[in-house]
Image (cartoon, rainbow, N blue to C red; front, side, top):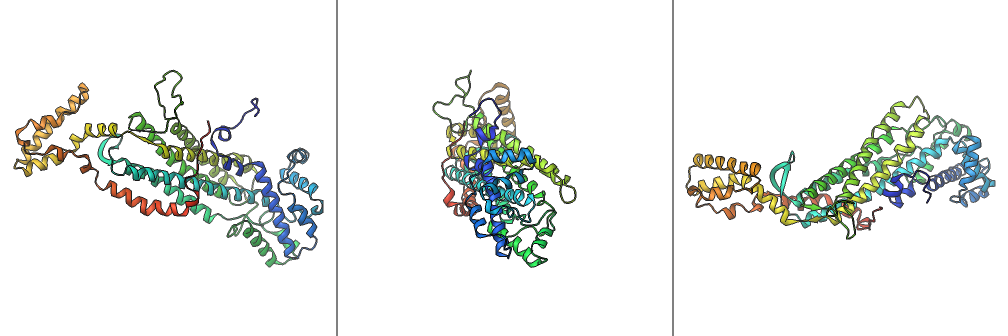
Length: 476
């Protein structure tokens, strides 16, 4: 690998080989050749006799042996990437010279290939999401009933369970998966529309036969696995499609960011940590540290994806009439890069979710530090049932709660509210052990975990069962 030139860290450190292959020059230009081949095949089937079997055979025999140096030489001379690859293809398939790209515009191969790549990349994202959801659901089921301190405004709130909190992370990703699956299911092909989308060249090719123009568009669309093409286009497919896709990826990024941030906060409280390898170094100076570097990396990548969401929208807004070329240079960045970054993000989520380390005793210590305050209503009602006066009891609890809070905040001492109340004769009949059982305060959190796994996760596991539990190896 050369070390004297810039290399994107999205490729070297984050994206998987599968995602990198989808956006590789080999794959893209291989798709261009396949698009030219299917166009020629369909044109021949519709009666264009100048396209010979020999031409199709030669084209089919050279789909992937692309001479990139030769194509670069052609492009340097022609200043046109599509025509450079037309000439390069013709040189290895001379019988097809003159019929490659017949009737087509550059965007026939460029846009249709991009749509194929994005569709397949979305499918990979969907598989990553399914694995992340599955991993979080497994974690949620394991810890479905472990009480933990809930937080609102990052202030101690009512108890929840470790498993229930994990379902919130998984639910965000399940919402994202719904959006990604919808995008895949509804994505249309540009199809065979001609230079400005009027199909004029094909109407001439078919001697004014409109039905054959429609048939050509439909045949090519179906052969690349799309249910339909856009009813109308200019020279390009609507650039709003890029904006919608990148927006969906930004939605995934927001979910990843939230999960990773929560894990980072929990790690700071020593309640839950991401996996930490035996020889991993947390800090070059502070040898004791266990930094949540995986979640920090995911957070940074997610932030990058979110920042890209506006650019395709601006491109869509800037398209003049049938098309302007200011989309191309922007699109080369703002379409592949969010896919590469999200791929890296989701691999981290899967890796972390499968290896989350829980420290129940630390979690319990946080719970018990706040539970006396949260249990005051239960204590009050138990004392009332034992014959106490509700208003007098309330005043005692109020006064002791404030004194106990002052000791905690000003002196850094443990919460002694229970000791204070036990010392009051009016609370002598209260079974503090029963009242202070944390499981009394988690509501239906365990049952909610069960319901979530059954109604949301199980169908996802069923749809993606062949794609689950695949190994994830993070890059450096």
